[in-house]
Length: 396
Image (cartoon, rainbow, N blue to C red; front, side, top):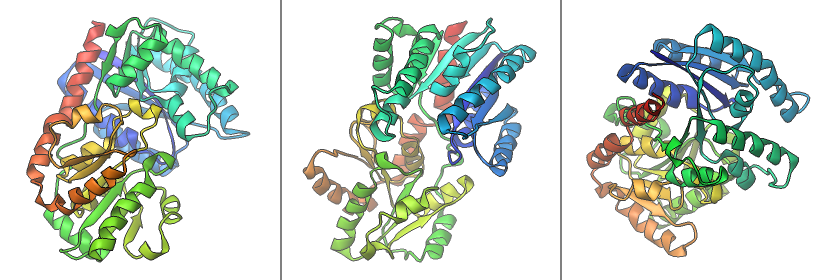
Protein backbone atom coordinates (compact mmCIF):
# COMPACT_ATOMS: atom_id res chain seq x y z
CA UNK A 1 0.00 0.00 0.00
CA UNK A 2 1.44 3.37 -1.09
CA UNK A 3 0.12 6.36 0.85
CA UNK A 4 -0.29 9.63 -1.06
CA UNK A 5 -0.80 13.02 0.60
CA UNK A 6 -2.59 15.45 -1.73
CA UNK A 7 -2.30 19.11 -0.65
CA UNK A 8 -4.60 21.70 -2.22
CA UNK A 9 -5.39 25.40 -1.89
CA UNK A 10 -8.97 26.27 -2.86
CA UNK A 11 -11.29 29.27 -2.81
CA UNK A 12 -14.49 29.39 -0.83
CA UNK A 13 -16.80 28.83 -3.80
CA UNK A 14 -15.06 26.02 -5.69
CA UNK A 15 -16.22 22.41 -5.55
CA UNK A 16 -13.06 20.89 -7.07
CA UNK A 17 -12.39 18.79 -3.97
CA UNK A 18 -15.76 17.09 -3.53
CA UNK A 19 -16.74 17.20 -7.21
CA UNK A 20 -13.47 16.28 -8.94
CA UNK A 21 -10.53 15.10 -6.87
CA UNK A 22 -12.18 12.98 -4.19
CA UNK A 23 -14.17 10.94 -6.76
CA UNK A 24 -11.04 10.40 -8.87
CA UNK A 25 -8.97 9.39 -5.83
CA UNK A 26 -11.72 6.97 -4.81
CA UNK A 27 -11.60 5.38 -8.27
CA UNK A 28 -7.79 5.13 -8.08
CA UNK A 29 -8.00 3.41 -4.68
CA UNK A 30 -10.51 0.91 -6.07
CA UNK A 31 -8.15 -0.06 -8.92
CA UNK A 32 -4.74 0.03 -7.23
CA UNK A 33 -2.70 -0.14 -4.03
CA UNK A 34 -2.59 3.66 -3.68
CA UNK A 35 -4.31 5.18 -0.64
CA UNK A 36 -5.09 8.89 -0.52
CA UNK A 37 -4.89 11.40 2.29
CA UNK A 38 -5.96 15.01 1.69
CA UNK A 39 -5.04 18.30 3.34
CA UNK A 40 -7.03 21.23 1.98
CA UNK A 41 -6.23 24.86 2.70
CA UNK A 42 -9.28 27.06 2.10
CA UNK A 43 -11.40 29.87 3.48
CA UNK A 44 -14.67 27.99 3.04
CA UNK A 45 -17.40 28.22 5.69
CA UNK A 46 -17.87 25.42 8.25
CA UNK A 47 -20.95 24.02 6.49
CA UNK A 48 -19.08 23.49 3.20
CA UNK A 49 -16.13 21.94 5.03
CA UNK A 50 -18.46 19.52 6.82
CA UNK A 51 -19.94 18.46 3.47
CA UNK A 52 -16.46 17.79 2.03
CA UNK A 53 -15.63 15.72 5.11
CA UNK A 54 -18.78 13.66 4.53
CA UNK A 55 -17.78 12.94 0.91
CA UNK A 56 -14.21 12.07 1.92
CA UNK A 57 -15.46 9.72 4.66
CA UNK A 58 -17.81 7.97 2.20
CA UNK A 59 -14.83 7.47 -0.14
CA UNK A 60 -12.60 6.22 2.71
CA UNK A 61 -10.16 9.09 2.26
CA UNK A 62 -8.58 10.82 5.25
CA UNK A 63 -9.37 14.55 4.99
CA UNK A 64 -8.00 17.47 6.99
CA UNK A 65 -8.93 21.13 6.57
CA UNK A 66 -6.59 23.98 7.42
CA UNK A 67 -7.88 27.59 7.39
CA UNK A 68 -6.50 30.33 5.16
CA UNK A 69 -6.24 33.69 6.89
CA UNK A 70 -7.06 36.82 4.86
CA UNK A 71 -5.76 39.50 7.24
CA UNK A 72 -4.05 41.94 7.46
CA UNK A 73 -3.80 41.45 3.68
CA UNK A 74 -4.50 38.46 1.42
CA UNK A 75 -0.78 37.95 0.72
CA UNK A 76 0.40 38.23 4.32
CA UNK A 77 -2.49 36.07 5.54
CA UNK A 78 -1.77 33.43 2.92
CA UNK A 79 1.94 33.20 3.73
CA UNK A 80 1.13 33.04 7.45
CA UNK A 81 -1.37 30.24 6.79
CA UNK A 82 1.25 28.22 4.93
CA UNK A 83 3.97 28.66 7.53
CA UNK A 84 1.51 27.78 10.29
CA UNK A 85 0.37 24.74 8.30
CA UNK A 86 3.91 23.53 7.60
CA UNK A 87 4.38 21.97 11.06
CA UNK A 88 1.03 20.20 10.75
CA UNK A 89 1.97 18.83 7.32
CA UNK A 90 5.39 17.67 8.51
CA UNK A 91 3.85 15.86 11.49
CA UNK A 92 1.15 14.36 9.28
CA UNK A 93 3.69 12.95 6.83
CA UNK A 94 5.69 11.34 9.64
CA UNK A 95 2.74 10.07 11.71
CA UNK A 96 0.95 8.55 8.71
CA UNK A 97 4.05 7.14 6.99
CA UNK A 98 3.29 9.03 3.77
CA UNK A 99 5.16 7.69 0.74
CA UNK A 100 4.22 10.30 -1.89
CA UNK A 101 3.49 14.01 -1.41
CA UNK A 102 1.38 15.63 -4.15
CA UNK A 103 0.93 19.42 -3.89
CA UNK A 104 -1.53 20.95 -6.35
CA UNK A 105 -0.52 24.28 -7.87
CA UNK A 106 1.73 27.05 -6.61
CA UNK A 107 0.78 27.81 -2.98
CA UNK A 108 1.01 24.17 -1.82
CA UNK A 109 4.22 23.94 -3.86
CA UNK A 110 5.63 26.83 -1.79
CA UNK A 111 4.74 24.93 1.41
CA UNK A 112 6.34 21.70 0.21
CA UNK A 113 9.46 23.59 -0.88
CA UNK A 114 9.80 24.70 2.77
CA UNK A 115 9.37 21.26 4.38
CA UNK A 116 12.26 20.30 6.66
CA UNK A 117 11.79 16.56 6.24
CA UNK A 118 12.50 14.16 3.38
CA UNK A 119 12.14 10.49 2.56
CA UNK A 120 9.09 10.75 0.32
CA UNK A 121 8.57 10.90 -3.44
CA UNK A 122 7.36 14.23 -4.82
CA UNK A 123 4.61 14.49 -7.45
CA UNK A 124 3.67 18.04 -8.49
CA UNK A 125 0.15 18.50 -9.83
CA UNK A 126 0.89 21.58 -11.93
CA UNK A 127 -2.79 21.68 -12.96
CA UNK A 128 -2.93 24.42 -15.63
CA UNK A 129 -0.76 27.52 -15.94
CA UNK A 130 -2.02 29.31 -12.80
CA UNK A 131 0.51 32.15 -12.67
CA UNK A 132 -0.01 32.99 -16.33
CA UNK A 133 -3.77 32.87 -15.74
CA UNK A 134 -3.42 35.45 -12.97
CA UNK A 135 -1.43 37.63 -15.36
CA UNK A 136 -4.04 37.25 -18.11
CA UNK A 137 -7.12 37.73 -15.94
CA UNK A 138 -6.20 38.55 -12.32
CA UNK A 139 -4.08 41.68 -12.55
CA UNK A 140 -0.78 40.05 -11.58
CA UNK A 141 2.16 41.87 -13.23
CA UNK A 142 4.97 39.80 -14.72
CA UNK A 143 7.60 42.29 -13.50
CA UNK A 144 6.20 42.41 -9.95
CA UNK A 145 7.95 41.06 -6.86
CA UNK A 146 4.87 38.95 -6.13
CA UNK A 147 5.07 37.17 -9.50
CA UNK A 148 8.82 36.62 -9.29
CA UNK A 149 8.44 35.07 -5.83
CA UNK A 150 5.69 32.68 -6.92
CA UNK A 151 7.47 31.82 -10.18
CA UNK A 152 10.60 30.92 -8.24
CA UNK A 153 8.57 28.49 -6.10
CA UNK A 154 6.99 26.91 -9.19
CA UNK A 155 10.33 26.56 -10.98
CA UNK A 156 11.87 24.97 -7.89
CA UNK A 157 9.21 22.30 -7.53
CA UNK A 158 9.20 21.58 -11.27
CA UNK A 159 12.93 20.87 -11.02
CA UNK A 160 12.81 18.82 -7.82
CA UNK A 161 9.68 16.75 -8.48
CA UNK A 162 9.94 13.09 -9.37
CA UNK A 163 6.78 13.46 -11.51
CA UNK A 164 4.75 16.40 -12.86
CA UNK A 165 1.07 16.08 -13.75
CA UNK A 166 -0.62 18.49 -16.18
CA UNK A 167 -4.00 18.80 -17.94
CA UNK A 168 -2.66 19.45 -21.44
CA UNK A 169 0.23 18.46 -23.67
CA UNK A 170 0.80 22.14 -24.45
CA UNK A 171 1.51 22.93 -20.80
CA UNK A 172 4.01 20.04 -20.64
CA UNK A 173 6.07 21.77 -23.31
CA UNK A 174 5.85 25.09 -21.47
CA UNK A 175 6.84 23.63 -18.08
CA UNK A 176 9.63 21.49 -19.58
CA UNK A 177 11.10 24.58 -21.24
CA UNK A 178 11.09 26.31 -17.83
CA UNK A 179 13.52 23.70 -16.50
CA UNK A 180 15.75 23.73 -19.55
CA UNK A 181 13.83 21.41 -21.85
CA UNK A 182 14.99 18.31 -19.96
CA UNK A 183 13.33 15.44 -18.10
CA UNK A 184 10.33 15.26 -20.40
CA UNK A 185 9.75 11.69 -19.23
CA UNK A 186 8.64 12.89 -15.79
CA UNK A 187 5.69 14.84 -17.26
CA UNK A 188 2.26 13.27 -17.80
CA UNK A 189 -1.12 14.59 -18.91
CA UNK A 190 -4.26 13.38 -17.14
CA UNK A 191 -7.87 14.30 -17.84
CA UNK A 192 -10.41 15.60 -15.35
CA UNK A 193 -12.74 12.62 -15.50
CA UNK A 194 -16.36 12.76 -14.37
CA UNK A 195 -18.71 10.20 -12.84
CA UNK A 196 -20.82 8.75 -15.66
CA UNK A 197 -23.46 7.55 -13.18
CA UNK A 198 -23.82 11.03 -11.67
CA UNK A 199 -23.80 13.03 -14.90
CA UNK A 200 -26.52 11.33 -16.93
CA UNK A 201 -29.76 12.63 -18.51
CA UNK A 202 -32.97 12.34 -16.49
CA UNK A 203 -36.30 12.79 -18.32
CA UNK A 204 -38.31 13.28 -15.15
CA UNK A 205 -35.89 15.93 -13.87
CA UNK A 206 -36.01 17.64 -17.29
CA UNK A 207 -39.80 18.01 -17.11
CA UNK A 208 -39.81 19.09 -13.47
CA UNK A 209 -37.04 21.71 -13.79
CA UNK A 210 -38.44 23.21 -16.98
CA UNK A 211 -41.84 23.58 -15.30
CA UNK A 212 -40.18 25.29 -12.33
CA UNK A 213 -38.33 27.67 -14.65
CA UNK A 214 -41.40 28.42 -16.76
CA UNK A 215 -39.79 26.99 -19.89
CA UNK A 216 -42.15 25.20 -22.26
CA UNK A 217 -41.38 21.92 -23.99
CA UNK A 218 -40.96 23.79 -27.30
CA UNK A 219 -38.51 26.41 -26.01
CA UNK A 220 -34.77 25.91 -26.62
CA UNK A 221 -32.94 26.22 -23.29
CA UNK A 222 -29.28 27.27 -23.39
CA UNK A 223 -27.20 26.59 -20.28
CA UNK A 224 -23.94 27.62 -18.67
CA UNK A 225 -22.83 26.02 -15.40
CA UNK A 226 -19.84 27.11 -13.33
CA UNK A 227 -17.86 30.03 -11.98
CA UNK A 228 -17.83 33.35 -13.81
CA UNK A 229 -15.12 35.92 -14.28
CA UNK A 230 -13.35 37.87 -17.04
CA UNK A 231 -12.10 34.70 -18.77
CA UNK A 232 -15.53 33.04 -19.15
CA UNK A 233 -16.88 34.97 -22.15
CA UNK A 234 -20.17 36.26 -20.71
CA UNK A 235 -20.54 38.79 -23.52
CA UNK A 236 -20.04 36.14 -26.21
CA UNK A 237 -22.56 33.79 -24.59
CA UNK A 238 -25.14 36.56 -24.42
CA UNK A 239 -24.47 37.55 -28.05
CA UNK A 240 -24.89 33.96 -29.31
CA UNK A 241 -28.11 33.59 -27.32
CA UNK A 242 -29.38 37.01 -28.46
CA UNK A 243 -28.73 36.07 -32.09
CA UNK A 244 -31.05 33.08 -31.70
CA UNK A 245 -33.62 34.95 -29.59
CA UNK A 246 -33.89 37.91 -31.97
CA UNK A 247 -34.51 35.57 -34.89
CA UNK A 248 -37.00 33.21 -33.23
CA UNK A 249 -38.52 35.39 -30.48
CA UNK A 250 -38.23 32.34 -28.25
CA UNK A 251 -35.80 30.52 -25.98
CA UNK A 252 -34.17 30.95 -22.59
CA UNK A 253 -30.62 31.05 -21.26
CA UNK A 254 -30.06 29.45 -17.85
CA UNK A 255 -26.89 30.41 -15.95
CA UNK A 256 -26.01 28.23 -12.95
CA UNK A 257 -23.26 29.96 -10.99
CA UNK A 258 -22.13 30.99 -7.52
CA UNK A 259 -21.31 34.41 -9.04
CA UNK A 260 -24.93 35.54 -9.38
CA UNK A 261 -24.27 39.28 -9.02
CA UNK A 262 -21.48 39.17 -11.62
CA UNK A 263 -23.92 37.73 -14.17
CA UNK A 264 -26.92 39.87 -13.25
CA UNK A 265 -24.91 43.05 -13.79
CA UNK A 266 -24.12 42.03 -17.38
CA UNK A 267 -27.58 41.06 -18.64
CA UNK A 268 -29.06 43.62 -21.07
CA UNK A 269 -32.36 45.03 -19.85
CA UNK A 270 -34.31 43.65 -22.79
CA UNK A 271 -33.14 40.08 -21.97
CA UNK A 272 -33.77 40.18 -18.21
CA UNK A 273 -36.87 37.98 -18.47
CA UNK A 274 -35.27 35.27 -20.61
CA UNK A 275 -31.80 34.98 -19.04
CA UNK A 276 -32.31 33.09 -15.79
CA UNK A 277 -29.58 33.10 -13.14
CA UNK A 278 -29.56 30.60 -10.28
CA UNK A 279 -27.20 29.38 -7.59
CA UNK A 280 -27.69 25.66 -6.93
CA UNK A 281 -26.07 22.87 -4.93
CA UNK A 282 -23.56 20.64 -6.68
CA UNK A 283 -25.82 17.59 -6.21
CA UNK A 284 -28.54 19.31 -8.26
CA UNK A 285 -26.36 20.04 -11.30
CA UNK A 286 -27.35 16.94 -13.36
CA UNK A 287 -31.07 17.65 -12.86
CA UNK A 288 -30.72 21.21 -14.14
CA UNK A 289 -28.47 20.16 -17.04
CA UNK A 290 -31.11 17.56 -17.96
CA UNK A 291 -33.50 20.45 -18.56
CA UNK A 292 -31.19 22.09 -21.12
CA UNK A 293 -30.86 21.68 -24.90
CA UNK A 294 -27.50 23.25 -25.67
CA UNK A 295 -24.50 24.24 -23.51
CA UNK A 296 -21.72 26.83 -23.39
CA UNK A 297 -18.12 25.95 -22.49
CA UNK A 298 -16.33 29.13 -23.59
CA UNK A 299 -13.10 30.72 -22.39
CA UNK A 300 -11.05 33.56 -23.83
CA UNK A 301 -8.07 31.86 -25.57
CA UNK A 302 -5.25 33.75 -23.88
CA UNK A 303 -1.78 32.24 -23.37
CA UNK A 304 -2.62 30.75 -19.96
CA UNK A 305 -5.55 28.80 -21.39
CA UNK A 306 -3.12 26.45 -23.14
CA UNK A 307 -2.89 24.57 -19.87
CA UNK A 308 -6.61 24.11 -19.24
CA UNK A 309 -8.94 21.14 -19.52
CA UNK A 310 -12.50 22.56 -19.13
CA UNK A 311 -14.22 20.36 -16.52
CA UNK A 312 -17.67 21.48 -17.67
CA UNK A 313 -17.00 20.16 -21.16
CA UNK A 314 -16.97 16.57 -19.86
CA UNK A 315 -20.11 17.19 -17.80
CA UNK A 316 -22.09 18.64 -20.70
CA UNK A 317 -21.14 15.85 -23.08
CA UNK A 318 -21.97 13.15 -20.54
CA UNK A 319 -25.41 14.78 -20.32
CA UNK A 320 -25.72 14.37 -24.10
CA UNK A 321 -25.78 18.14 -24.64
CA UNK A 322 -24.65 19.74 -27.92
CA UNK A 323 -21.87 22.05 -26.75
CA UNK A 324 -20.26 25.27 -27.94
CA UNK A 325 -16.62 25.38 -26.84
CA UNK A 326 -13.62 27.58 -27.60
CA UNK A 327 -10.75 27.19 -30.03
CA UNK A 328 -7.30 27.49 -28.45
CA UNK A 329 -8.07 26.04 -25.01
CA UNK A 330 -5.64 23.35 -23.86
CA UNK A 331 -5.83 20.24 -26.04
CA UNK A 332 -9.57 20.68 -26.67
CA UNK A 333 -9.37 20.57 -30.46
CA UNK A 334 -7.41 17.30 -30.44
CA UNK A 335 -9.68 15.74 -27.81
CA UNK A 336 -12.84 16.70 -29.71
CA UNK A 337 -11.74 15.95 -33.27
CA UNK A 338 -14.13 12.98 -33.48
CA UNK A 339 -16.78 14.31 -31.09
CA UNK A 340 -20.40 14.55 -32.26
CA UNK A 341 -22.47 17.58 -31.34
CA UNK A 342 -19.57 19.97 -30.67
CA UNK A 343 -18.92 23.39 -32.19
CA UNK A 344 -15.45 24.88 -31.74
CA UNK A 345 -15.93 28.65 -31.64
CA UNK A 346 -13.16 30.86 -33.02
CA UNK A 347 -13.17 34.05 -30.93
CA UNK A 348 -11.10 35.89 -33.54
CA UNK A 349 -13.40 35.25 -36.49
CA UNK A 350 -16.70 37.01 -37.14
CA UNK A 351 -17.55 34.15 -39.47
CA UNK A 352 -17.66 31.89 -36.41
CA UNK A 353 -20.61 33.90 -35.10
CA UNK A 354 -22.49 33.09 -38.32
CA UNK A 355 -21.53 29.42 -38.22
CA UNK A 356 -22.49 29.02 -34.57
CA UNK A 357 -25.99 30.27 -35.39
CA UNK A 358 -26.38 27.36 -37.83
CA UNK A 359 -25.13 24.96 -35.16
CA UNK A 360 -27.67 26.31 -32.65
CA UNK A 361 -30.54 25.95 -35.12
CA UNK A 362 -29.75 22.31 -35.89
CA UNK A 363 -28.75 21.36 -32.33
CA UNK A 364 -31.94 19.35 -31.76
CA UNK A 365 -30.95 17.01 -34.62
CA UNK A 366 -27.86 15.69 -32.87
CA UNK A 367 -28.03 12.19 -31.39
CA UNK A 368 -27.69 12.73 -27.63
CA UNK A 369 -26.79 9.09 -27.06
CA UNK A 370 -23.83 9.36 -29.42
CA UNK A 371 -22.66 12.51 -27.61
CA UNK A 372 -22.87 10.71 -24.27
CA UNK A 373 -21.19 7.58 -25.63
CA UNK A 374 -18.25 9.69 -26.83
CA UNK A 375 -17.94 11.30 -23.40
CA UNK A 376 -18.13 7.97 -21.57
CA UNK A 377 -15.29 6.67 -23.71
CA UNK A 378 -13.07 9.75 -23.37
CA UNK A 379 -13.94 11.66 -20.18
CA UNK A 380 -14.96 9.11 -17.54
CA UNK A 381 -13.55 8.89 -14.03
CA UNK A 382 -12.37 5.39 -14.91
CA UNK A 383 -10.21 6.70 -17.73
CA UNK A 384 -8.88 9.46 -15.50
CA UNK A 385 -8.02 6.94 -12.75
CA UNK A 386 -6.15 4.72 -15.23
CA UNK A 387 -4.09 7.72 -16.39
CA UNK A 388 -3.21 8.68 -12.80
CA UNK A 389 -2.24 5.07 -11.94
CA UNK A 390 -0.07 4.75 -15.07
CA UNK A 391 1.67 8.00 -14.07
CA UNK A 392 2.15 7.09 -10.40
CA UNK A 393 3.46 3.66 -11.36
CA UNK A 394 6.48 5.41 -12.91
CA UNK A 395 7.73 5.89 -9.36
CA UNK A 396 8.06 2.15 -8.76
